[in-house]
Image 1 (tube, helix red, strand yellow):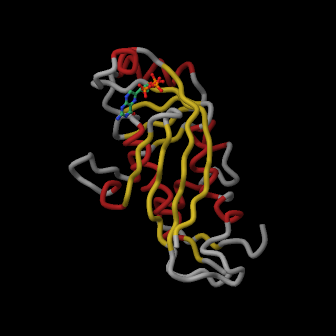
Image 2 (image 1 turned 30 degrees about the horizontal axis):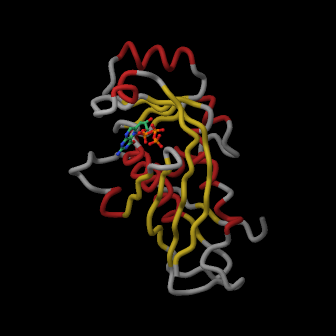
Length: 193
Ligand SMILES: Nc1nc2c(c(=O)[nH]1)N=C([C@H](O)[C@H](O)COP(=O)(O)OP(=O)(O)OP(=O)(O)O)CN2
């Protein structure tokens, strides 16, 4: 069975090198919708694959890192990177350009990492991240599966190369969240949310 949970954020970007002129040459924003799809052949003590409420803890915090901020590609010019970081408190730097394809891959890698490190306490079994869908507009979206997220051909995404500004980190329930995930610390789901 597959379940999906929708999150939303507002974010600004430029996507260098794409065919659409306004997209590659002007800073612009989108109201993103992100769907996290989880799958399992089993149900937990609440007869659910994975309680939606549990997704609104660390997973939601990580996805909402992008809210009201700018996402930059580390391969962009230093002048652009510098000015974005100077004029926006909330920014995320990625090792890949922020197309909706790459957003879906990056979010897959982040959420998959959290899921792998999270100990469930309510009978959840063999829950896997099936895919991540990122809607950039009402009419265009990308869906990343595991083989896309970890594809070297699409640009390998090192955890260390996803960098959040201090303002973003301070908006998490635990400002060390991503450091802990990168280190491989365990997370324990709360018994009640
Ligand atoms: N495959 C992709 N194509 C485009 C992406 C992308 O991430 N992946 N991104 C863009 C731009 O960011 C652009 O702002 C969105 O383009 P588009 O879908 O054409 O947006 P519109 O609002 O103009 O679309 P409508 O057709 O009016 O709904 C470009 N391409």
